Length: 398
Ligand SMILES: [Zn+2]
Image 1 (cartoon, rainbow, N blue to C red):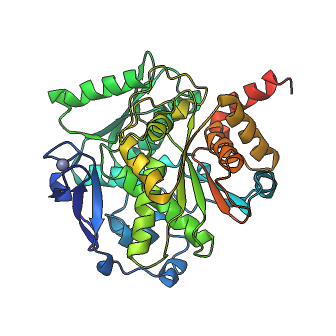
Image 2 (cartoon, protein in one colour):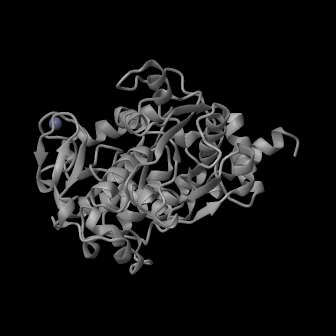
Image 3 (tube, rainbow, N blue to C red):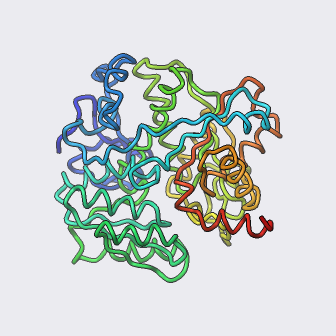
């Protein structure tokens, strides 16, 4: 595998063993724990000036902080997404400024593209024939696109309720799809039995936290945010959360930015979940170190209906290490908040609305200051969730 000189190896978050990336395509070979990349900060040749000189190079501009060099990356020019001011929403919250990091501007309309780019790179370098993953929908579309780019086959295991656009575009990119009757955990079961089949030994997992690289790619969101704010670290970043890739990525990013001396502190990282599928919020409330499976998930926000998050423990670490909160939002509040951002011109999705509604809860609870700069992550394009937003308006009689 072609890796960067700053990459030291992959470290298991559970047993702390270090592994050679070439020998560890999935989880820790010793204990099954999640792997994260570890870096030699001194070997990373990156400054504010070097980044400014490479403005249009997508994720490649951060390659000294990533596992794979720029010329090895499977890329569709993901990243460099807009950071859009939302002054009306800021005024309502009573904070200094609100910005929406619009991840809908990524190549397949989702923040998943950042991690899929790195994970598809690794899959190709491991000699995979096919990449596979369980997904609520959007990451399946992303995987199909990046697999196509890498010359690999792909297969997404999705629940029937996935959006039409995600299912359609997965096929349009040439990806295979198994539509599994039931909900997301049924898709996970189907994925795991396919991966365990001896006939599929050349398949490579792109499941969240199963590959070491999707959370690595997710780091680049916070890299961009601090740069877009002229290297001022925001006070708060609110991540709508399913498996936890976004918030865990930002946690890793904040650590790494400090290690290489680009910034001096970390933002408070907040988790936002639909209150009818909120395992991270429940675990945080109970003071638990790990999430427990949510028994009866029932939310209109399908992208976040993940009852058993693969990164639950790591998401809790991110919240607690940075002084953040884990907050639930009702579907109605989330849809209303999304519509409110749209009324300000920002094409937020229902999924993004969960973060906006959580920010309102944080403000009401006194957890945001009057001078605070708050970043709301919009993980997926509003246009990909047009039906649920439009139905919300129709229910209100608009
Ligand atoms: Zn381990």
